[in-house]
Length: 388
Image (cartoon, rainbow, N blue to C red; front, side, top):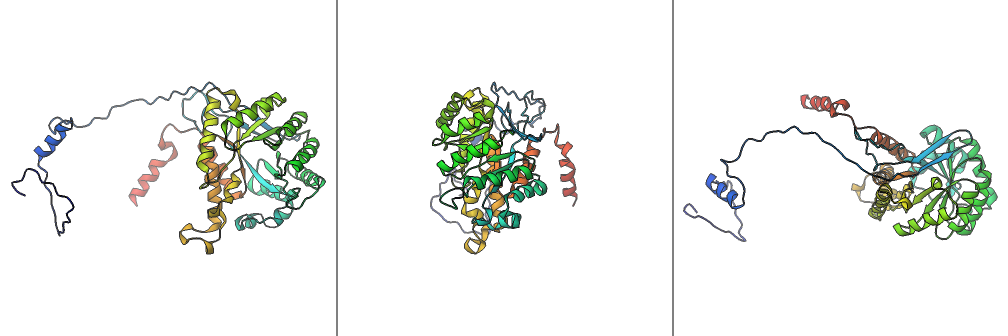
């Protein structure tokens, strides 16, 4: 090969203990020039040029501000965004006023449900007492809002009378001072009855009926109007359907500051990307001035527990999946955090540790970015690592 200018080797295996290729400077220079690049002689030592970073953000729209208010004075607020989530850069004129709100799930028949073991271990005996469950979430985990799910009234479960849900709901309101979202069972007929009963007895508060959908909105939205509650408008991953339901709600008299959207929270690994893109499109559209989508967004991130990766025991899963006690909470955290990055305002969560982590992470993301990394002590930490 010594006197060869060019050689092409194809489909050849080379075995050698030591192999060295020498690329002469003129070969490199010729190759560079043929590609339009400067020669070695033309290359200069790079110089750092000082420049100032400016971020120009112009979003003409603003998301509605929604409040949950107890007559005792306890409140929780979502919405009010003027820029995309966590745009808390120094020097930015517009900033978002409220971080995502986490609401803790409480079920009326928790001791009769097939719940994942990590959930049972966290709540223990209070699963059979919804009022104590809510109190436990508030006092131990700092819950700022509770969602009461009344599943027992469904004829497909226990077919409890509405009066039983009313009694449980009243007990929760008397036990905790934080706002309570009124959830439902999924049975359309019983849910309308439930909302009629529970919205009336809580009319001194501003809570939320969760939820009105394409089968029930004509009956549920007027109840929210009559008793001055917020109303969750649920659609199934469809931007146009959400716009239509928002418009219909306004036509029925629901004020703009009483509307919360829920375009469906799909689970990580089972459609999360669809929810992510819909949430993002809704939030950006609202900020760009689309009035029909300028409302806070809720998500049932509890759905994360529907993924088998979250709840299956170690005996039935590959060893590299890890412990179930970690998998479930992590699955729920990733669901909530992913959607928070694109506009989630209200995260309905199940596992208290997952909920606590989302509150902490959101708080960190929501704080203003420092002028330099040195303010956070990163440089000192890195230098210490290098020393050791």
